[in-house]
Length: 435
Image (cartoon, rainbow, N blue to C red; front, side, top):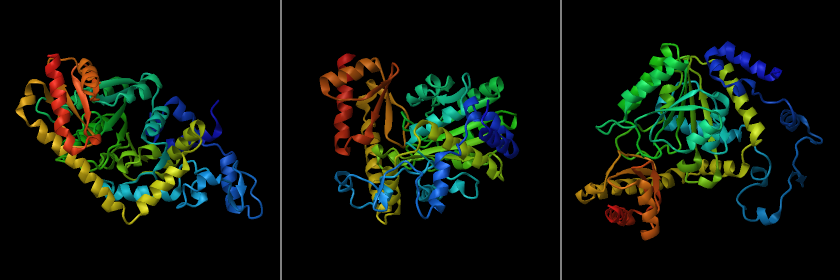
């Protein structure tokens, strides 16, 4: 039997935008945020001026109890910003600042109605939340053939989604918008619901579409929505900001927001790669209803359901990482330091392009287009990619990732610019060995 709080949230969705209610999975429809300990504790925090005996932490001397052997390693931070639980949706000041950051970096979000970002335990957790909330067994997901392998276990193994792939690139080396449209239309006609996942800069290819290609992707989604298909449009923006050459310089989330009542846009991003803090595990999930004048009830209901699944799985996200990211974003040195690291990453990407221009490699591989992110992929000629990977590792001490029979992913993000020439020479020599 459905909990009355879940029913109340569903009624809010039905009133605000019934298509969003239709998009939810069975679990998503049943999700709610309980009016239990956390709600009572929040009320007590505001009003319990004498004693607050609600939340399950230990206190001492008017603040959280802690071990000094931990505290002494973190002298720059107040104990209240490290040791207690963070709120279920994340630190309010971090959520507000991340929203400002998104608006400043994505001009197409100006004037759009979207939720406050909700803190997740990095981006993979955000993907898991989307899967739980919107994927029923047998739902179809539209993804390129060059995709992050973890999507399989997140969406297919866990939730039973059927992934419908399209070729990532045209023969001319552009994003394959016609193939994307064809697969999306097939899914729309067959299911009446499509989950579209857009990962730019792409892992593993390192490609971000041009502005024209991005607009064409949005147009294709709007077209099937106008014909009656509900579309959950997810932007996996893990590598956001690392745009080096001719491409979009912002997330498609802005153009997908408030696009059509049958399109729910969901932005997943985080500090992990954007701020070079992989171990902090601090990410965000943001929703945009499809109506041009979004009903706030829709965003409120989605936020409460998201808080419900967070409460049911990890309770809340780690507090220290949120504090560290918040302080970084507030720092006057942040813009200059961010620009410095971007320049290093761009230098590595352009050096790869320079090295690969050498005709001597033509017998060993072609390479897929790349203009952004951490990675690029070689299309190996005459040798099995996994055989090459093992040979590289055992004979030359070089690690790379094999994908399928022909593709080898190279993470230039972790190779110093002066070592890039040697890296590709060794890969080339390994191909020659095996050929």
